[in-house]
Length: 115
Figure 1 (tube, helix red, strand yellow):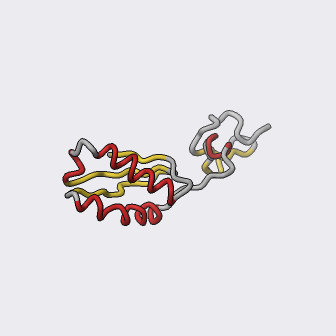
Figure 2 (spheres, helix red, strand yellow; figure 1 turned 120 degrees about the vertical axis):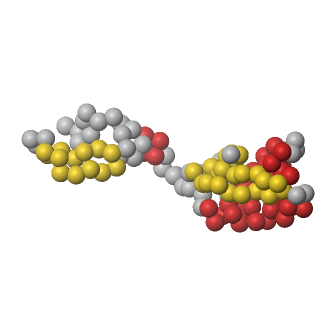
Figure 3 (cartoon, one colour; figure 1 turned 180 degrees about the vertical axis):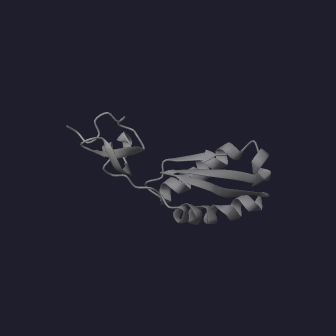
């Protein structure tokens, strides 16, 4: 009988039971996505900040700026400020400029999202 019998496969925490159903502890169970991927790697905040530091002067020259809000897996969340926040060309700057630079420098990078 499997140790995980009766628990959902994507459960975040499972309870370790001994015969007689006495709980002796808990532990995390990886999600199916993590179990299926053998090449799980996540980007670091420092690597993304490094790329943004090279792009930032160009954005600041136009009166705007970009701030890294969060890293989630291989995705970065950013916030635009100043003139960039309401600029109609911000979409082009983000996806053709910033996201392209991130993909070129960080091979594991997958997606850029604006918050």
